[in-house]
Image 1 (tube, helix red, strand yellow):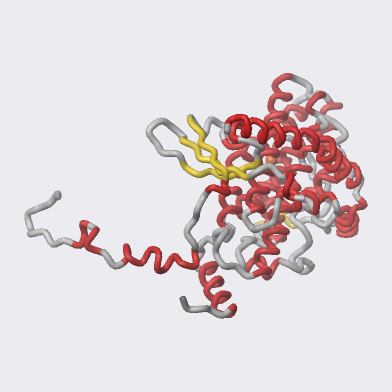
Image 2 (cartoon, rainbow over the protein chains, first blue to last red; image 1 turned 90 degrees about the horizontal axis):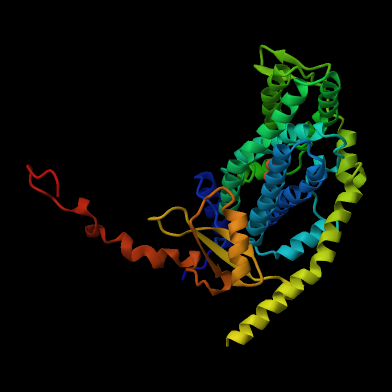
Length: 314
Length: 95
Ligand SMILES: [Fe+2]
Ligand SMILES: [Fe+2]
């Protein structure tokens, strides 16, 4: 067989990407592409899993059986999303346990939004509506990402996400149709989650060090600022419709651009939270480490049982 | 570290009676029974299936993408395996 040089392989690889031909696990890929994907997909997987914590916090205190069943189903979906994504990460040659340990040792991040506490029931509305809404913006774009297993996981995830945002918006709508206290509770949740939701799209394009390469590899299909703008444009009318006020005095419709203009994001806060100093960073990682450690004996027992049953069969 | 990891399983689902099982993804489980149970919870939460197969990933033998040229070339050069290769006289519409 002819041996091809790295240059030829790289060129061939980029041609496939440019032609929108998916890259599959055993195909040749540049080392940096593999590394970037491991970082991006595992970060995404961790966000799904850590994201269960702030909502899990309210399952036992949901105001009705209907809301409880819905929230439980949503949180279970997020566990599923984490699992699809861990599987996709594993196709790149890193073990699941290594991936999870990287999170626990702080080597890999998860979405900064999950470092904010969920203080009232209205936060379940704000999280579903805004946080899942922002995640959907991102995930819909990623259904066309260049790596096959990642794209397929995204398609499945997007299908499941569609009720997540609706149930959150429904909670907000109910509260806004309620008493003054309920309305205030909804507005307060929006006030606390609006800016962190905008931060979910990551640093501005000018500051984002990975964007250019990621776009070329099509592991990202739109820039952070493009996605953020789409999110603002989609969400503002939804807030207005139910009588909520977006906590941004600079927000206004720009006829010329055909988009909303909005105020400056507090990037200091963003970097503080990303850097580990958000309100709940410590608590979130502690919860994950505890789950792993305290579940270890169950995983070991299951393996021991499996090998014992196997030896009995033989 | 990885010696304690549960083995990886590939999951195949028949979405409805009459269709074949199709690969949908993978998961980790200690044994086949748990793999089936987990596959139900992970891949069929919205009635996506009426039947599930699970198989340990390690048992799969896959073709090598680097060899896909020589592997699949024999089919490429045999156009006469397709009906469009043949000339039919005018007047024959369906064959
Ligand atoms: Fe999700
Ligand atoms: Fe979600």
